[in-house]
Amino acid sequence: PDPRPDTNNTRCMENCRDPNSITITSEVESAPIEVETADSAQADIAHEEEDPGQAIYQQYCSICHAAGVAGAPRVGDSDAWQARLEKGLGTVIKNAIEGTSSESGVMPPKGGFAQLSDDEVGEAVKHMVEDSR
Image 1 (cartoon, helix red, strand yellow):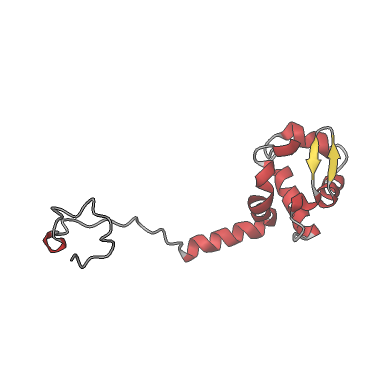
Image 2 (tube, rainbow, N blue to C red):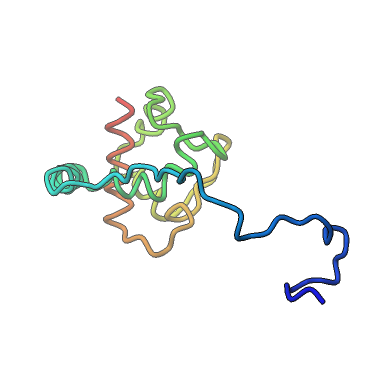
């Protein structure tokens, strides 16, 4: 009897190669690992401190505002943002916090991320407006 497991599958039970005769001829090379240096980490932290809304935008708001989903004004589309800013930045921030619905689109309260503070939403809005000028 064959001592190997799964011997019920008889399709490949003849002329099988002896596992001891197999030799390794090369190794799979690993991909280089990028290591973040302390300098680049500090630069990232400094940049986030300069613009705290950027990290919030990247993690939460870009889901809709990068592509214009559900009528969201795309970051970089100055005309779309100007139309909203006619009512003032405070109103835009208030609408982002409380949510709004109009012919131009729907904004759920805090973009659907209730865990965000009002200040975080405000910083994200300021970042998007600044990047759309």
